[in-house]
Amino acid sequence: MAKRRPQGDGTIHKRKDGRWEARLVIGHKNDGSPMYKSVFGKTQKQALKLLHSAIETYRDVDLTEDSRMTLGEWLDKWLDEYMIFTIRESTLNSYRSMVKNQVKPFIGSKPLSALTTSEMQKFYNKIKKDGRVREHPIHGKTLADSMVRGVHMMLHEALDMAVKERLIVKNPTNGTTIPKCNYPEKQVLGDSQLNTFLEAIKAYPEWTDFFYTEVMTGLRRGEICGLR
Image 1 (cartoon, rainbow, N blue to C red):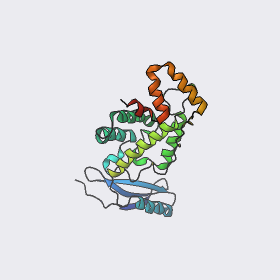
Image 2 (image 1 turned 90 degrees about the vertical axis):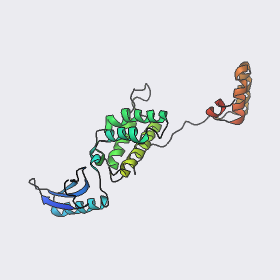
Image 3 (image 1 turned 30 degrees about the vertical axis):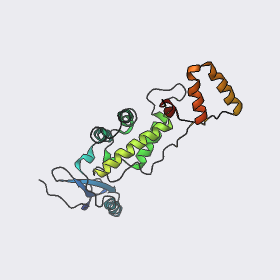
Image 4 (image 1 turned 60 degrees about the horizontal axis):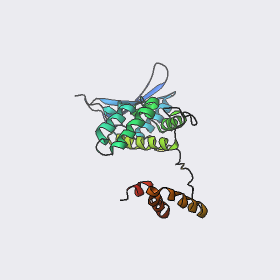
């Protein structure tokens, strides 16, 4: 097995192209050999400054070799190994659909270790504009705000687990901005409208009790459908 180098161990040297490269150990492969993170500067002073910043970022972090997998690969692994028995089948299918239709086509090939908050923000903006699979006659390729929020919440949960598994240092979805929930304004019937509605439902005896109970109690659809 290769000798493990100290975590945060850094070196700096001048490259043939004139730039200065600083490297530090950010983790170890399965055989114990070190994994490196490189930063580059036009001058030695600039490279040293970037190195010190990187050392602070990766302090007390020992990433594993799996951090080299892509976002798409991690999401498949996360769903198959971490989530498959912890959420409802309908939710799991919804996550798989978002991974297939929104994440993989736009950002799925990005390595986990390369994801940044800025890139995640650009991704959300992109799928908001072009994330719909089938073009809508009115909305075109624009994705609904609720779907963008759903993709964000799924990614946030998946990347939180990646942090716990030492695949990334921090969750790049933190600090992003996503659309607010824009629910259509509810229509509330006035007294005259309510009376008209109650008169109208008398023509349908099999539904009269159902709708009368609904307008008098305000039960949700699922709640009233569950009554016996």
